Amino acid sequence: MRRLLSMAMQRADDLVIRMEYVDSKGKRTTRIVSPIRFLAKDRFLGLCLCRCEPRQFQLERCDQMELKSANEYVMPVPMAS
Image 1 (cartoon, rainbow, N blue to C red):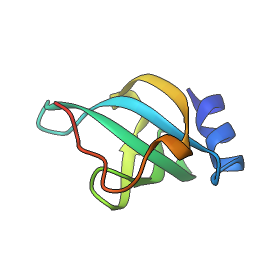
Image 2: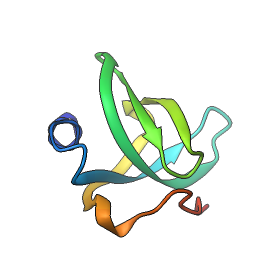
Image 3: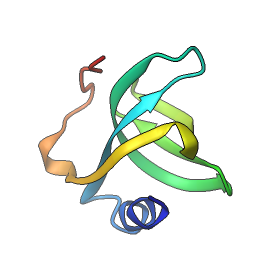
Image 4: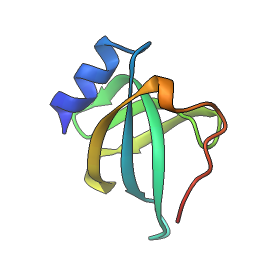
């Protein structure tokens, strides 16, 4: 997971992350995120293309993470639940 995030951070103009995310209330959504940097061992800061703003993501709440071409997405990306 950290390896995929690092790759997307290094190629920020080309790659984004598509992932399932469970928020603090237990709601699962599909997010498209452009990772910016790691904040701690268990968190990263990323531009959420669904919310059009920077957000913090806890790694333990991320699932089914995959690299995608940034060219496939234009903000705002609909958030799927």
